[in-house]
Image (cartoon, rainbow, N blue to C red; front, side, top):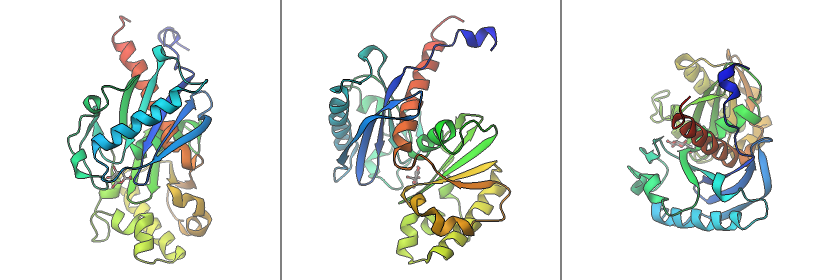
Length: 276
Ligand code: BGC
């Protein structure tokens, strides 16, 4: 370890992650050393309509509950990561393909201003990818991994040697004449199009071949609820340069990755404000 890294402040032991999904908003206290939840996750159904204000109120309720727990992070080191299923740059939401359109241009720093802790917002697939890269199917592996989440939409995350390149959004590519690709490749599309599992595996294979041409990687990690059924479709995903594996953290990846992201952002902000 070089002299500069010896001065790097440690991440806090725990942080909070909140994963905003289409049906539920889930939060948990994350042990950042292990990459797992400390205690149970807490879930509240997503309000309808899921406007930023309605979702912010639910995030507030979830935070209250988590902070009332004995193992909650101390107030002075509290960092909170929140996921959004859209492009997020500097905590501002810049796309809303699968969420209420009132999220467009929403500045989440403003929206969540009254809540405790240092809050950072990031794309949902990016959170899952960070978690898998650090603690799951990509842990301790140098090189580039791409997380592909298959749910209502298709999310992607690129992580190189542990560093996230955010907002890759490759589910919005054109693919075999369809735009966005997620209209054919998402788990929801599989159901809508009544695709048998082997056909779905073959569709996913062709999609990953397409993605690999644009962004070659060492490993694809396939996540989203459907990854529980990976033995039904992943055996058909062959012939790629990269290895293709199912996600390991499944349900908790978004929460864990959001917490990790928020803690790291806070650490970087602190470093920048310190004379090195
Ligand atoms: C959105 C992405 C998101 C993905 C998964 C896509 O429609 O554009 O931002 O990560 O769905 O939720």
